[in-house]
Image 1 (tube, rainbow, N blue to C red):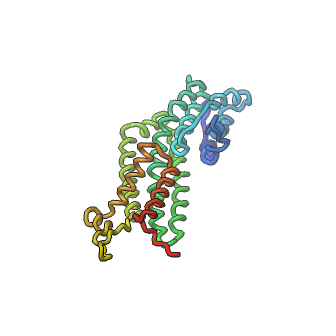
Image 2: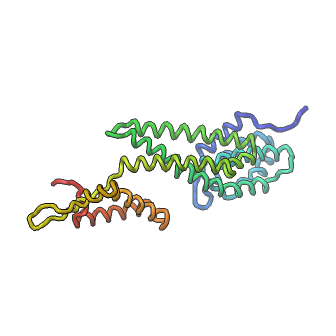
Length: 278
């Protein structure tokens, strides 16, 4: 009789769902995703270790600090399930080995996930949604919610089961040459989408005009700028915001406050005209 312990799909699905819904529960600066991770491993440990004492001993490997990108981080949980299965079958893996793997992967996966998901995928979806929301249409909001939920759930599920199936080899795709090529391609597409949104939705112009002694306009600054470089002020403001956030590490909130201050001063000196009437 084969005594090999094997995780079934029902147990793995339950583990994944606990990660998907609970990765950021019980979140604190001290533990962050530790308890969410631990909860996702409970079905695995209960399946592999029928005795309560064995479950208690096994769960100690998951009490250490853990924090990564929750979407791509599901691959680490899948890998852990595979390693826990190997440990239960006496294949020379202990809790320290599992914890070292988690600690070693959470940093790289966080860096890749934050740039790929938060910095690229979400702006792309928001850019498309903004374009669909022109004229106050709710279609854009509905599109974003539906597409993001589907991508988040099934994307994480795919990574979880891929991590379980391939073990630590699943990470090679994310951090290797193929993964780097995919991230560059997605980054390029993201830059194109964000650039298109910028050109469509951001429009910075000046109302500054100089008059001669007869009261006639002899210099319309916006017309002069358009003849040299259409949209120049929009580009300059965009580069300024990028410089603040990327080079000076100014938060988005402070960047918006700086733009409000610039707009306020610009209206006072007559450089900007908000077009308001009272």
